[in-house]
Image (cartoon, one colour):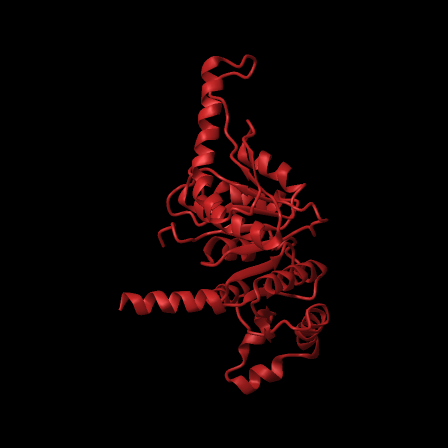
Length: 297
């Protein structure tokens, strides 16, 4: 029975599509472009989701739901599909226009996706989708990796990952190594920490602590370096708060990867403070990893 379960999980991992939410905005177009490139890199299908507004949900049967899909809604999905097929003619592309609560719909779709990709801001009157409840709920509760595309990377050619030793961080490291391998990019592994005392004078004890932190980071990286020997790894141990260090590093990266919670998170919270702040401050696409083979679910 266990063997059959393992086979089912493996088949699911190998076949699930890259999913992207679109709404016709410029930011969702950037998310679409990123998602299509990711699907092509991974040789996976791309699934385009345009969630119909709540006022479409009064239909009582499928025929009425189809009738409620107006020309604009259909056009969003049609245009997105055409854009992808022009750039990636060999890519398998499907689309859907489900109706309902946006966060609930996207989370349901995420159960069948390898990765969920969203733009940082939608078209609604509530301002930034990134700061609002939809993106926060999807990032915090989706079982699959979620990538929020805020700014389009400009070819920095590096992946940055935050590491703190937590189980979620280990899952983020594994995802970041895979991304670096897929893209042929160097991986910058960043472990931000702070001296417990004043910074005016670096004492022998502080120097020893810095060496200990570097050794710890090397231990976290060792098994993945063995698994991905082709990936060049750059270790960074800035003496500053993680949010500041990772935000700064994102300005020179094509992708920033973090775990959804770290060592400092409160038990039961779906999203840690660092990942939550980076949703707003990252200067490149941000991948938030909630689960992995080493993370209990």
